[in-house]
Amino acid sequence: MRVLAALVLAVVPLGTVAAQSEDQLRSYFEGRSVVARIEMPGSDDGVDVYPGTSQPIDFPRHASRLKKFGTAIRRGDAVMVTKVKVKKDLIEFQLGGGGYGTFGDDASPDVSISSAPKTEREKNLEKDVKREKDPDKLRHMREELDALRKDREREDSHNRAAAAEASQIKEANIRQRRLEGGSRFNLRYKHQVPAQALTPESVMQALAAYLDFSETQGGDQLSQGGSVLQGGTDGLVPVGSIDDLKKGMLADDVDALLGRPESISQRNEGKLVVSTSMYHSKDRIVSAEFVEGVLIRYTISTP
Image 1 (tube, rainbow, N blue to C red):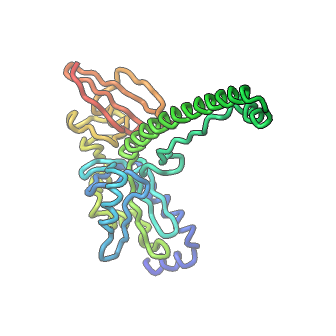
Image 2: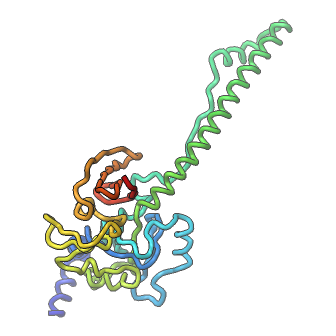
Image 3: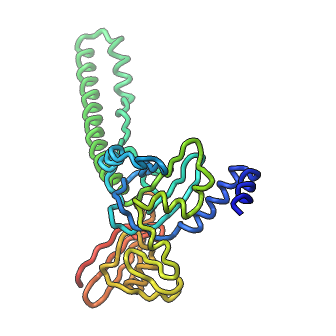
């Protein structure tokens, strides 16, 4: 059987094998929950892993990314596998959105401003002072010209201050989005991904030291955020408490844990649509925020 598989791989183009294997990996992992065993940075740079080497992770580089981008996924966090992608020499294993900085994410805090333009009066005065011969008129024209230039300088100074404030707000917003945008593992191979690495078992083996896959392999009982949900997608019966609520859970699983929300509202945060569900009971109120059906933050208060 192994000989036959080897012959098939030798005949079928590598691109076809990779495409078929990517479909298999996506079908197996995407939408499932895993638990982090290490902290992961809030960036699409993620964590580079070199399977089969003596030091699969360059931890000084890993620490540098954590310091630069912040920690989006902490040890013990349950998080959803949102995408698996096979490229020429790597397998991307994306968690909770794959990390901030992907296509469409604005990762620059810079706010551009343009200088205040000259008014027509200032332009005309600049021309007129070159032709004016009368000393008194020339003096008045220069005084007016200086006043117009100072007005423009004050406007530029005001615009720079506003841009600096906007840049600080934007930088804080980017930091927050990095903490909420997930992260990823990059399984990197020399030259190209070997065919034997393109199986769920191989991927789990390569990441076993950094991710707990026990929930992924749980069969009919799939754990989301520490709460075991029994049965199919309809009529889930939660086993757990409010303590089981964790970022990364799907909206359906939160509903199964807390009951149907009393109200649902939506707002825009940049290009994201954030949905807020309010869950009420006699002893607590939970406000849960979702993006693309994934829990990104929540607060618990008393009535």
